[in-house]
Image (tube, one colour):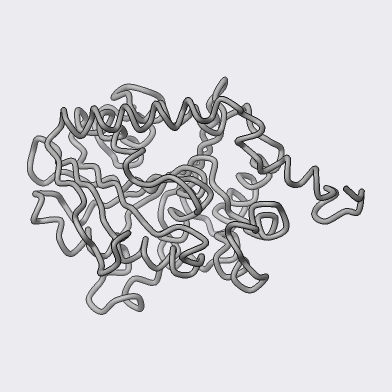
Length: 293
């Protein structure tokens, strides 16, 4: 491969390596298997409403894991997979960490590339959040306390949810539909994704990458944001987190950067399974709940 620079001092091979988490962490399949196994166990163990449609497309479904008490806040989990892989069945396990703390968990599904483009994936996630707000009473949850958390591509989508002009998206929705977000190893600048090997699957042109990059959004509501990083990640993931931090702090919005020592792109999600982990406590802290101290 040519040594020609394609992005921020990286040639093509180097840029590809920065974002190739499956090559960087070859045990990734073990993590995927664990997530699916844990999630299957969660679905059997906890009360749940599974495969609830939020739209007309077959991919537009979500799973609900209600808290034991009525009127609970809602944490909406957005799965990762670089927009082309995985689905909600891998992330039910997050309810294991949240339900004991009095939180209702909703895990949303969405269509993947190349069947669906980035604009449509973002629209589906927004439609899912709108459905949760409209229907929260049907599963005894509090629609005035909706928060979001996501990993990798899910972290990107969390930011796009926080950027949403909800009244413009759908009549009757409040501007502050989402009350806060947590992004784990998120992608906030899609330009390097467009320029690396991933675009063979994601299929973005420059305009699509620009309008779906969180660092280029207008955020109409001053929401609290947590960016979560492991210390075993590529330099580009560190830069992505710093870029999002700069945007949020320039806006003067509440921001917290949580760094998890000893965790990589995949392993940090394991903390969401534990009711008293650092990650779970951080989510509770953002939600202003007991157990978040």
